[in-house]
Image (cartoon, rainbow, N blue to C red; front, top):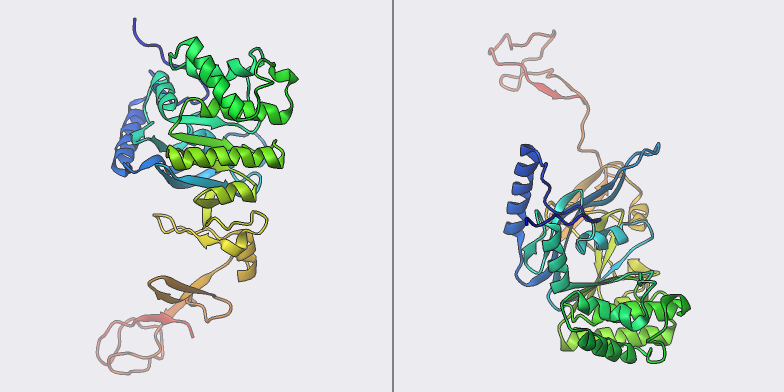
Length: 364
């Protein structure tokens, strides 16, 4: 019996009705992905775009704009930025839960382009776990069964799955709530169960959307301590969307996302409410740089800028209004021949003295 295509939200599996043009485009994308594979990276995104179709007057919404990112094996990276900058869309695309409009994702050295749904499921099971902001627990299963379910999908015996689930729930302080249903758990308890479910499979990479957002400060630090232990002792990589200084400080570096682009990188001394103090702007492989709004405001806003100084590691931009603009006025016929200095008295195209062609010059 032929393998059925797995239909789900990614839309990333092979399609039977691809046109010849679409197949050629996909083959080109595959080759581009293969050429970009970094064996030291657990996760890569190459020229990632995502557009949400809309019939509203404003038109389609571009959530991701040619984004590139690489997370090394065992590295912890935070994603920071204002609401609506594309953080949740990015996580879904990187976790192969949603197909990007263009570009591709490489998971543990393997391109996800042109994979069947079943292949994508296996790739996720072998590599990545998710922690969503809202928990996403199965409502008809108890806390321990929600956690154990992740192991049963990997063909682990039910008794062994429950034992491992119990161990991680105890570690997260939920030993008295293991048999409780999600509806009877508080928001913080549901989030801890979701975190346990992500950790129990021993993933190589954890993608998390505000994992401590629903937790009290003490539990939040306990979770970060557990993350730190996995990070240091087992080499688990993390990509975490956060608005928390403590979560950002746990990570090795932070990337600032604005309007679907990474505009800057920050170190561990990040103040999420004051990103300007630790910001290093990013220039991507195409030479594109995006200025955060507050930087652009201090520069004087959008407009034309000249490169007044350019050396290795240093560029100075000057507004065309402050400096004499390099964009000159219109061209006119020269008033004097550059060869023999004859002064023209009409619109002739040749010099009557030496026969040279009359050049065009900038209007003074």
